[in-house]
Image (cartoon, rainbow over all chains, first blue to last red; front, side, top):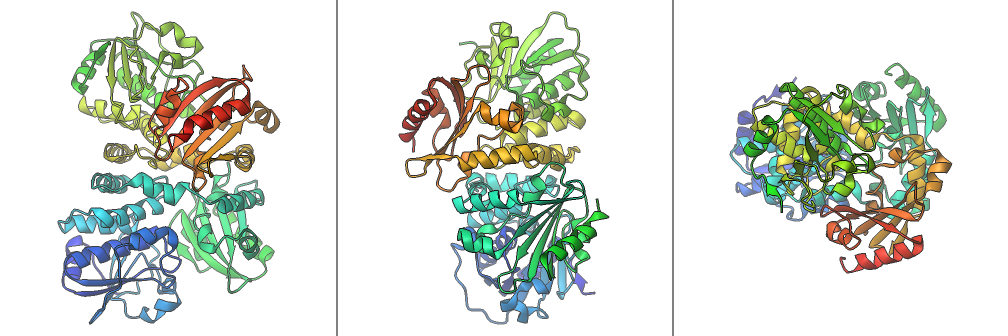
Length: 318
Length: 318
């Protein structure tokens, strides 16, 4: 067991005591890891320090606005930290050489593998961005401008725009203050949640039309094959955030989304979404992890068989 | 011009000075008018007063949970008030006899026709429920239980689950406190925003597939005909909340949804949704009204001609 940091005071001290930050974020980056990473980076630079945000997959187009004031800096004596990274496996290929060099991890995944020398873990926080927002406030900062935008983005994206169970008192208070500080929340939400390309709409329509139902419609399975991407011309990033779709059907208690992988067509990344069941426990059976209502795992094999195995594993949770 | 009430203190006094309340809500009721109406009703009853909530169309199944502690009471010397009703035309057939008898109106529509003897109007409030929440707090109440559920429902439904421009600081602070008071927000949101019947999903798929685009895809028009309802077996209430769909297509700046009416097949209720344009001003051209990003009007005639007229009227706003 590595060291635990349990107060914002001590966490702040870590940041104040260092000057060159490498901030690692997880592969297949989302609004929360990028929001928290860039918010911290801009904040630290504002204190006169140097900081870079690294991601194995780069910044997807959808999130480029978070990086619009960012250019990589030259660092000395790097202090390596990670945000929103539950497991070093999630660092991805380009960052895996940092796996045993992480000095500080800030995370909100209860399933965190405790890989960093020191860790600030708050599994009650809806988003890593909530932790960063509270930390910055505790340090006397009043996040505004792009820092506030980054933080709002993480709060909104990790809570399904405040729709899910994890959006509680702290999250709404943070959102209220970030909006007061000038964040154009409606614009961000429109890009994150509302607007879809015609191709994406066509793909969703097809995927929803081909849902497979099990156990009296309480389990719904969606399969995203490479063939769909090839045929519709969508790239993988454009299919981000489809995992909640199976859960939109009345009566469905667990939704599973199988995404065929690009490099290995027998490999599927599976997203688990639940109404009441413990998604993290379901994913754990396949060596995966995540949160209580949203988790994931990876499997290899023949698709129909994989689906049956997964459905069987889910049964006892509903 | 009737009298304006401009403080919660004066508004509270109105409520405290009366004992038998008829609370009118608008036809085709939504989560906000019912949430605000029932919250006020339960609150007034808690003060030992009598109060009823009336609606021309009754309470739709989706919102029945708001009325689960409600039974109509016998009233004497009725004090007639309305919540979230911008125009007496919106009272609907069964309540139209109250049109010239409304003593107090609480509303958040800038387009309010000022029909009540006294009015508390706050066009900056995202929802009538926000006004009621702030009023109750100002009166020293700490809304909880079903009152808090009612208020959260209105906040969430009128802001698209905090997605739209109207969800600002006050709205998030109210939501934070209502969740702290025990509201199961995720459960409400799931019912309001996520779960759809298979029939509804099929209908949405068909409607999205038949969108008509104008002006380089900047205007999208959706048409909901009675025939669709007949064929899919959906009832009208199940098609509530589809107006934002045309706006989900990339590049669309104004979305128009034409809903054929049951009783008069040449009559269409048109919902206007906009990204930046003034929806209320667009609706006003057809004698309608609403908010800056969501408004509506009713037209009568041949469909293709009505669509062209509407599209022409929208053009100069984009």
